Length: 320
Ligand code: SF4
Image 1 (cartoon, rainbow, N blue to C red):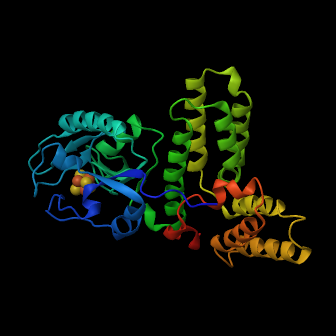
Image 2: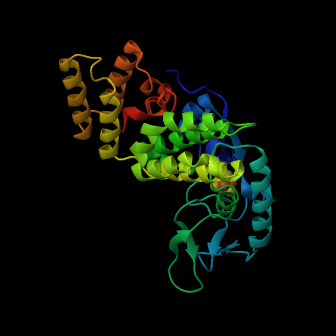
Image 3: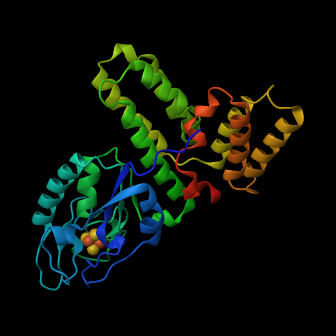
C-alpha cells in the first residue's frame, strides 16, 4: 500500500504565483502552498502569458471587453488591443505545453489572461459582469480538455484542493496504464483498483466505465483509450461528497468482515458514521481501515487507489 511515487508530476502554474515579479505593476502573487508544499511532489512549470506575448514589466493593465464568449483583451487607457496577438500566442503555447506532458495547471484567478472562472468582462455599455475566462486559460483548456485545471483562489477550499490533487495524480496513473503497448488486462486491473475512488466521486460514472471496460474487445484500442480517459477524468471532476465517501468507506469495511472481530467491525462502522456526521475528518476512518488492511494483508482492497490517492504528507484528507 505504497504512496504515489513523488516528483514525477509536472504542473503548469501562472508565473506570478511562484513569486516571479511579472505582474503589470512589477509585483507577484506568491502562493506559499504551491511553492512550499505542492513543489515537494511536482515540478512546477511557470508560464506568464502577458510577458511571453511581449508586454513589458511594468505595463498598462489589460482587461476583457465585449462579448463574454469571445472577449477582446484591451489596455483601456491607451486603447491598445492585444486580442489577436494574445489569442495566437495562447494557441501556439498551448500546443507546445501539450508536448511537455503536463499533469495539471494552476491559474491565477481574476486575470484577463490566466483567470479560469468568472473573470470580469466589460460590455460596451453598462456594468462589467463576471462571466469570462482569461484568453490563455481558455486556449489551454480547449487544447487539453483532460488536463486537470484549477485556480489558486479556489485551492484554499479544502475539498477543491483535495479534488485537484486527486485529479492530477489520477490523470498520471490513468495515462501510465495506456502508455506504450498497453494490454486489456492492465486496463481491467486499473479499473478494478480505481473502484472505490470512482464510487466516492460518482457511482454513475463508475457503472458507465464498467460497461465500457466490459466491452473493451469490441472497440479499436485508440477509440477505447480516448473514451475511457475522457469519462474517467469527468468522473473525478465530480466532487466527492461525505455521503458518497461514507458509502465507499462502508464497502471497503465490508472486505474486513470475518477477518476482524465483531467489536472491531462495529468500531470501524462507528468511526465511518462519525465522519458522516462531520465529527472527524476523512483521514480518521481511512487510517483505521488502512491499519487493518495492511495488518491483515486483505486482497483486492489493499491496492485500492481510494486509500492512497495522493501522498499522505500533503495531509489533504485531514481537512475534508
Ligand atoms: S496572472 Fe498570468 S499574465 Fe498576469 S502576471 Fe500572473 S502569470 Fe502573468
